[in-house]
Length: 408
Image (cartoon, rainbow, N blue to C red; front, side):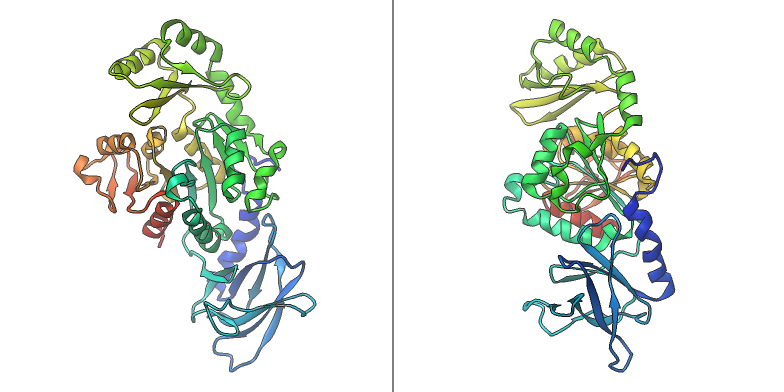
């Protein structure tokens, strides 16, 4: 399924109205993750003097494995248990929770239940999370067992995903490499996959699984035509490559027109000439070419692409497609190729606790109150009107920290 520019994704449009009705109309809404083909909820509304009722659950459009029911007679929550359609199997709370049945506090709204974990959904307007992958969503050495990633996924699915909120990955990897790490680490299905530092935007069909199996369907994850046309019209790859090879041999050019059609990735072994060499390359390539540097003290990744591309422009395009404004968009990153996202006017941002010095240097230069405003655990305003949290926690835990700070 192809997203029309500015259209409503299936999962958002199908669920958004019912979630809103559950909050305004006083009914309890339950979203339940199960392997059962059919299921029902057996429940006793709070304040109903012990009277039990049964309601069938329906499949959630665009969310394989999820079912939902509206409990209209439970305006302040309920005690409940789930069973399969035949009534031969029951889902009771796990031992660590205790008790025979699940039970909400006396609180209205919408709830999710997944793997024994009952969570109250956020009642804020939908949010958009645009996250880098390596060392941000994917923790590598900071999250070897994926525990921080799983905590983010629990919060995302439990509080945000079924209220119209959207998740987008924005990475320097190409599509093949991005899908590979998604399968390896078990990443949740995004609405869009932005690759190659914002030069390739892929649509991810809504009927693919929400778990990492979505990444097995590479043939169905296709380039968004409007963005692709813009990249093709504004980047002369052959000319940029010719200039770099002729005049800037220290850039070890990688990729090819098939794997990286709208950018040229390279490696540079850092020396004392690097800042001036980078400046000269920018000057020679002209104002239509973006030069993006990231990496550590020994090696730098340097990408060359159109100024119509890059992670900030990709993020702004995602906001347009998902129809979520900057003030409800959270950008997440750790390195130099992420820094432009924080300059998108009005967004919320989180620099993960393990951010590289190059990103922190950029953010200190952008802080409206001066460099000293960038303190770990604190939120600061930028000169472009964004608000950024320099998180205490690393990688995916930092994204949870930011969601709780901006949309508690």
